[in-house]
Image (cartoon, rainbow, N blue to C red; front, side):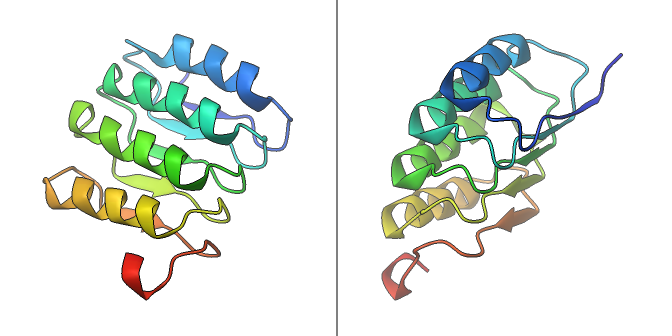
Length: 129
């Protein structure tokens, strides 16, 4: 059974992110997913957020450099209550600002399983820290 999938730097874009999200929902095997550099944008992040709610075993996600913005960060943050296993979320270089950072902080305060969050090279100011 496939437990870790890496599709970084493949230009899967929104359509590919949606297809992966559909496959992830209900999956009991995949624990790691790497989607760096794929231009999935906000819409793709929203689809992945929905998939997170339906996937109780996914523990590690790398979604770096995908232009998710605040809306994408909010969509992922809202998904955490459905996935207590998620321990690592890599969101480097996604143009996440204060609103997205605040949503992520609220999700962490609710007692999610996250132990590491990568937010380097975003647009977070003092207000969002």
